[in-house]
Image 1 (spheres, helix red, strand yellow):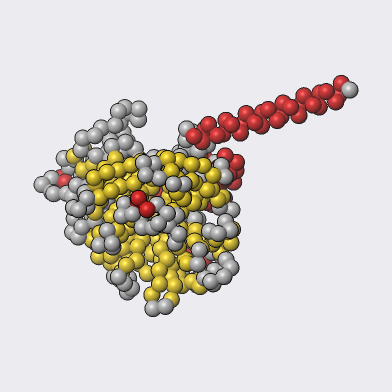
Image 2 (cartoon, helix red, strand yellow):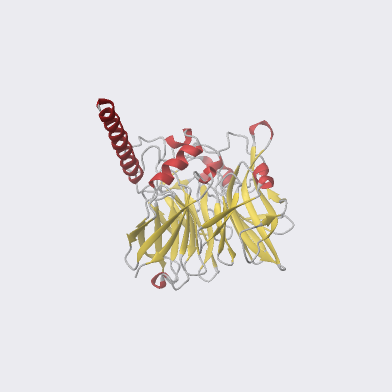
Length: 420
């Protein structure tokens, strides 16, 4: 009898500790503390991070906004590589989405059933050290994927490269066959400790041309301690570029630090870019031909060399270095004073969130939110609403039903619908 009581006490103690650990994880996740912050969590194996996120994911929850109450339904991506940065989601028709992870692995997601199917992706994984974005499109009746990411070179150097691959997705089922990718274009070597997360990286195909954004691709990135290659015409970094099918590239704009979003809006007539500044000062920009957006000469962000807990400034920082003198730079359409980690955006059109039609929806990483932005006739920001999802939003798009699909750095897909 005594041994039985000891066993019961031990079981109860283990259950209590397990319950406490679970609710402790929930609180840590809500506050974005270790192991859920993106800094310290880098030392953990992907499987541990996947377990932490999957364990604390709700099946669904509701968040509020001014115009719609929003239901979030969670789907855990069945691959440990889904936790972290990079990757993309794409509509491939017939109620299916292609989910591509930072490591190059792709999966097909079926919206109606919530099922995933792994796509054979070894050819892509062998090319890229980090897949920053993927864009699905059709040309002359053929279906293509355009991959943008970083590739390893000799002597510790890296490049930002664009590869194309044809694919076949059946109308029924989840199988997808992917041809071997072929190189379309790549940058010159970056050999000064290149950092994948600072490569920026989005790709869009429109009107027979590819549009890509590239970052400054090195560590740090404060004013006065960064080379001026974002401004130079002989460098591919820190640019928005237009590339044709022959792989010929020309810079549309320059002076970008770390662009994380690139998308057409206003009925396809305006190209928008979102950009990580330094500590704070993230930008929404309208990409204009021959315009320079100021990095590393101007920023509304605060230098990382400042004390981290010091109040963030809202005034513009201006470099007095020689490359910056007597030059005119394009001001951002909008900037976020506080650290936001702005990411990809889209222009909403659909019946599910009818009150959002014509608005921009832009994700954020450290801000863990969607930003709904209403533009004026001059494409100026007249209203902005933050919708806190408590998730690092990496990519998003609008489904055929008008619902919104979000890819998170926590290894989940979120399907957003209106409860109105």
